[in-house]
Image 1: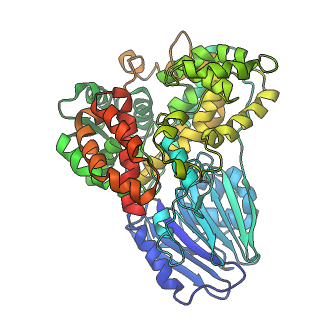
Image 2: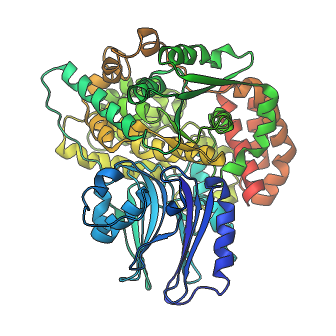
Image 3: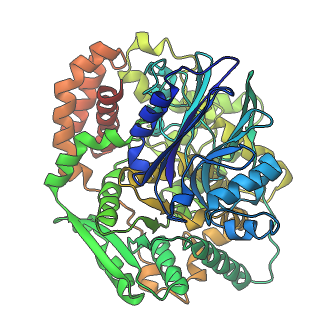
Length: 632
């Protein structure tokens, strides 16, 4: 796991002080790789690459990056290729100089170019410079576990693992993107290629860019999910396939030259990962949990302890206090140069620090299972209302629009009201976890002059492309239904932009690598194609996953009520956030022009009156204001 960055001249030359510039970019990424630093600079070809290393595989100096071969091809690589030994075995005539997956990746790319991407099982973001073609190839893994940001300004194509590194470039200005801010207020996250900065973009999951001396030559997806109509003779046959696929994925992610631990909440997904890790290791496995002092309804540690005893792990836990959260809140935006207002980042910060403090550099987690196997209880309301939505949407002529005219009679925060609003706007019902402000709410407190600068003031456009992609697949796979749609949206929108983004930033903030076996390519293919009738059966979410694990996990772990990785935000932090918004609200409104002061004060009044529905709104406003103060 590492930090990568680089510069490539488009039809010109790089600055003479390029080594110092790359050194500054590397310094901004020190937390991603505290073990080593590297630079490759070839002024004759206008290429400079930088790297910060967190040593996981081949801990020797042989794993140093940037890594080049005898021909002069060069790579900087962030991530892990779990099947690198299998790929290495295909090149028996090639003499490898190291035991690293980086050298295998370099050789595979030299041989197969972008065609090699399909063969990779791993999490990765890399830049590969082909000296013969004088071209730079950037690519990102299927799920979007590892990030790449890029910009093309002043005749230079620049890229990095994090935006904060790009902001060190003397020709880059931190200019906020108004449309991105508008969308962030609905989703609490941003979908690729958008970032909060004008002119800076992030590469999509499974995206690739080829850059030459004349500019960007190619930008496309190198992989897209396709559905398979699974044939099976029994439910057990499919549950066995789920178990075998997950077991293989966990085994792959045990590949490391340092010990591998796990985050353990005691829920189904993390418990399954720990159980299967024990299948692949007879040695010490460290597991980590966090809880909150005096907040039993947010504390799952007793379940984690039960699983730890069952699989004989060395279990380490921390009980977070209210004072610790209060001390952490002002610093949360330091990790997020791209804002992400999700309160779960608070426990993840503490559990990541706990792991690093106890010498664990690699951990496995259960991320991704809920989206792939329909595990969220909040999705039930959409599943219940989708038949009505589909019927009303399909009515002929102007009837759907006429129904939409009734939207003013309904509260948009209720399922029925949300459905009517969506029909009237000819939009899909499910917005993929948009938990912050509805469109009408935003227009109530945003500054009207600022709103007029937004090209299309409707955040549905952010997810419309994903719904359209699903609609196309539905034409050739008519068995797909609303549960499949929600799982697809979870995979394409929620997983990369929320769960993987926060894990990457918070793990890397403490220099630890986080691996997600549920997002193995084979598991993605199998889970998304799994019949929805087996994902939710008799009201039980993740039904087929739970059935597959019954031989390993007790029922009181498998079938207990889902709690989620939550934090007592309202109980412990509401006053802190309210005080901050009150103290800084007026100056924020005048300095940025985003909120109207009257509208912001109305939000404060609703929160102060005890309206529980506004807690997430407060977190969103607080995070945005703090983020602006830190980065803009």
